[in-house]
Image 1 (cartoon, rainbow over the protein chains, first blue to last red):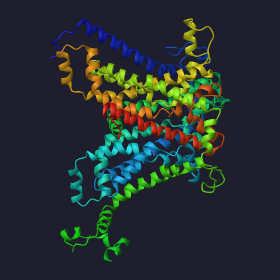
Image 2: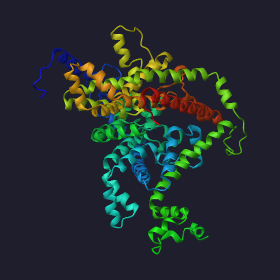
Image 3: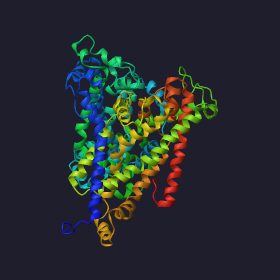
Length: 296
Length: 331
């Protein structure tokens, strides 16, 4: 029915201008990332001359070889992968478990628990009291400082709880008649039908775990426990670029790579996994954001 | 009394089949409550694990705030520290850095609010007008991308771009806008621009999600009616789309207003340095600096509390104003 209607001149101009506008936004969004990508694939010494805007001038994999040859960078990557995997599984499971209990209207004390959580959304202890707590819990210089203090989030709980309340009651009733208790209902009925919302929370928390550098910076001094983002932070913000070159000292790589080119390659390696994952979860997190903002 | 014995918990573990339905209701309500709790003991365990976590990680730090009113010493416990009343708060108000820290915090946040808040709405409105669904989805996916970059990586990109031999200086010098390379991150006068631009670049597409989702819920009949009335594309945006997402905008605005004292700490920490300190030191950073770097725990906690209390007041005011004007509020 729309095809029958001819577009007016005004409409044509509007559509054209709008498309150009959107293309500009895409270009502005992508170009800075593209710039880093092509420079990371360019010979480091050559890149120092500048002028690499659209395509690598001296294409090489050497920068990435240097990254993967550096024990410091690889250890930091490993910490990041470990804290993201453990953190996501623990956070999603724990928060979903509490959310399921609180989603049940018949839970005795449910209102009090929810009030207790709502307060935490608007008021918190702040940096120093939290630091003192972490110290008293002996979580300083401890891998679990990445996991336990963010095991639970009341904000995520609201998103999960909203979703769980929409599950048809018949499903749970049927299982209960078969003699299932609340644990097995949670594990065998609720979790499997809630994959979309669990994927959303997993993505949100995964991005947090992957990108967080502050925790590693204030609670951890031991370099072998620091994640890659903290490692990069020291290189980027404190300009301790010499650290980057330590990795390749004495090898043939010093002829082509520079601390800048290794830095760019490390940034690319750190960012790629997330960039590949998020488009597949897109349809889930849009819904999650929606619930979160309305209820939050 | 019979019912008091049951508080030990041993008896109610099994429901007594001898008590008929009608009589159960006439029992002591505390007895009944206990039976319900026992019946849902698995559920209560799940909930209480969360409550214990919140008690430790949310409520103990809230109690820890009292060090703001004490002279806390790292080698002693909180309760041993002597009370000093409002000394630390008075000290902050008289602090040489107070004016500067407040100016930077509010300046950056207010500009973010007035420029950064409307832009995603405008982007969403125009993206909604793209006719091809596949093209629209592709743009959306691309627009989310920067949100998934960490501030450290973005800081690295910015440091590369803004260096004296970086692309920004190259381009501006080629265009004869400047004749000397500028070390942008070392000059305080450029800091706010960098912070605000990079924040918009990173979050524009992500912040638009919520508006796009709200727009998707607008009834197509409204647009058809507007078309029949002879409305053009801009008029439809202004008179149909925008009013339909007004409540979403209001709620996000309340949250944004209450957050004006929150700086994006991850972002500030990556981009600040001692050279641009005069325009980059914000409350959040000052709390970190006085507390964790200088070890003045009580003073730092007082500044943090000062911030939290003002944020809470702002939230309540914004909520009330929105309730009056729009009939939309958080609570």
